[in-house]
Length: 174
Image (cartoon, rainbow, N blue to C red; front, top):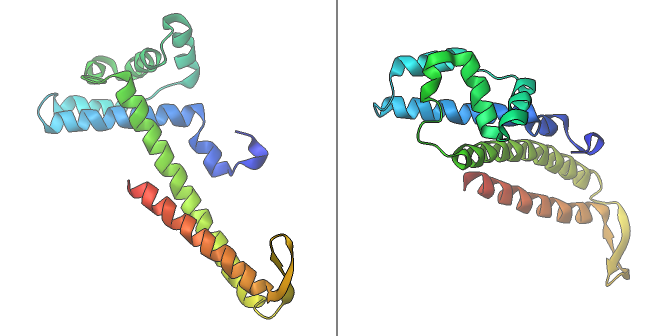
């Protein structure tokens, strides 16, 4: 991402560290579910939750050697967790973790977009009200047309922003 065009909070979602955090979040959630089903000991899950961590630099070091991002990540996490780490990633494929973690990042991104769209719609609504009587040249087929108000033009923009907001809400709930 290009920093000058990226909201800081959006950029933070897509860092390497954030990606690894979402991987860990998925791994822990699966451990919790497996403990609820009786597949792994609940005590192991508590130990995993208490100790699970990673060092992005160490993950890269391990990846240089093993040439597999998920194996490198899991190896590093197990360096923190110890014996209970044998229950991490049990029954999963790399894609299970990668795809689910990516979905978590996408949802977080949509949440930020929805917050900002709300700010944008409020700003457009305010300006539309302020300029409801500001006359301007209308346009039709790329040429001048009947006069309109700038507030009316802004109301059209607001309608489009609200349609896009509805699309984002629908996307998030999918």
